[in-house]
Image (cartoon, rainbow, N blue to C red; front, side, top):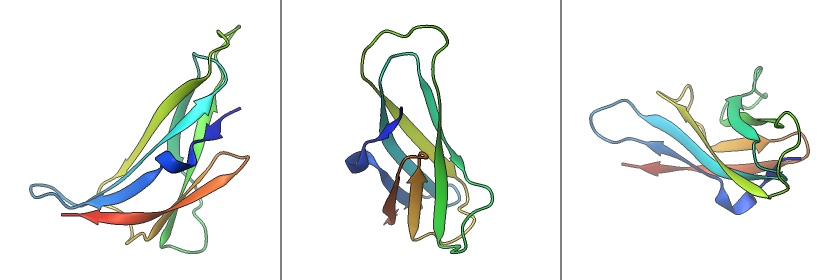
Length: 106
């Protein structure tokens, strides 16, 4: 079971000189044993509001028996250039969802 760590999720548009704007989304999930893998993927199709990017957490349990050790996995998603002027990102894991506002950096 993957748990979204609500206070760790952040999203921003990086407008650093020398490259195109880039949407960056980071956050952590907690899993019950070590050996799990998790990543953020863009949902297809997206929802009806083009200003909200929807990302799914895809996680895989390890084969066999993993050591019973609660583990935190850092996640990162980048889209360059952003396909829309997103105002929010929704992260979903099948059991719940988190919505974060997109910040701006220069």
